Image 1 (cartoon, rainbow, N blue to C red):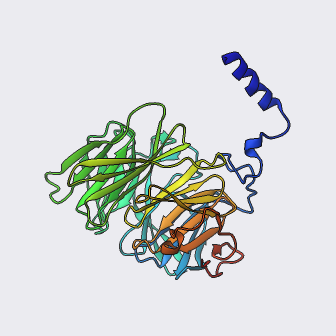
Image 2 (cartoon, helix red, strand yellow):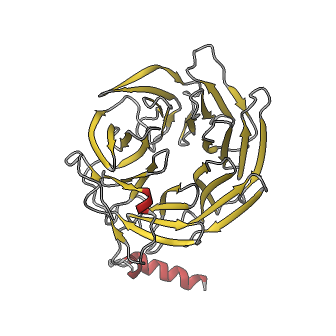
Image 3 (tube, helix red, strand yellow):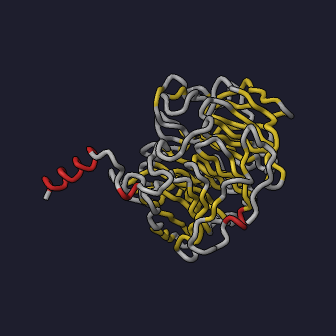
Length: 386
C-alpha cells in the first residue's frame, strides 16, 4: 500500500500537466505564486485609526502609506514613505495619531526586536524618540505581539525571551519599568484588551488563554483556559477578540498544517468553552487571514485563492463567499465594526460596509473586483455596493 502511494505521488510530481484538482482555480499556493500575478508590492499589513478616519497600510517593498477614509472610499495617500523600519502589524493610540509598529525591516527575515512609535500629523509621519529596544539583540523569526490599551495608559508587549507580557506605561521614559505578567510557557501569539481596558487577554503556543484582570495592577488576577491540544497537528492562533460586554472571548486557530480552521467562544460567566469546526475551504484554498466581526457573530476567512469566506456562528456554516482575484494578505476593521478593509497580494485594498459584506446570499461567489479598490493609480474610486 505504501509503495503504491509513493509511486502515485512520484508520477504526479513528474507529470508536466497540473493535477485536475488544480485546474480552473485561482490559487492554492501558500506563497501566492499560482494564478496571482503581482502588479506591484503586496499589502502585508492594515490598521484603522480608532475613529476610523485613517488607514495605515504597509507593503512588501517596505513602503508605508497612510490613507484617509471617507465612507467606503480611500483618498490620498496622505503619507507615502519608506521608514527605516517597517512592519506588518500596527497599533493605534486612542489619540488617533500615535502609532506603534515593530521595527523588523524586511518581512520574513530575522527581526531586530524593537517597538517603534511615530506620530501622524497631517501629511507627515514623524518618528518619536521613545522606543522599546531592550530585546533588540535577539534575532528570531518570531514577531512579538503588542497593543495599546483603549484608555491610552498602557502598551502591552510580549517578550520573546521569557514569554512574559510587559505592561508599559504610556508615554514612558527611560527610567520607567514595565509591569511584568508571567505565566505563559511558550511564545505569546496575540494580545487584546477589553474596550474599557479592565481586562487583557493573551493566547500562547502553550495552548492556553490567559485572562488578566487589570483593575488593580498591584494584584493582577489571572484565569487560565486550556483551549486546544499541544502537538504537531496544532497550528497557530489566527484571531483573538473580546466581545463588547466583556463576557465572551473569541479565538480562531488552524490545524492540520493550516488547512483546517477552528473557532472558539469562551463564556467567562459560565466558564464554558464552545468549539466550532469551520468547513474546509474549497479548491485547496488555505486560510491566510482571519478576523471576527459583529461581536463574534461572524468569522471572516481570507484564503490563498483570493476569496473571503463569511462563516456564521449562529448558523454554523458558510453563508457567503467574496472573490477578489488575488490572495488575501490582510484584513482590518474599524473599531465600531462598520467598515472592513481587505488587502491583497496584488497591492490593492478593498473597502466594504461590514453589514453588507456579511449578508447571506446564494452559493454563488460574489465578485468583489473593480470598485472599492485602492491603488496608487486609482486612490479615490468609490467603494463597491451590493
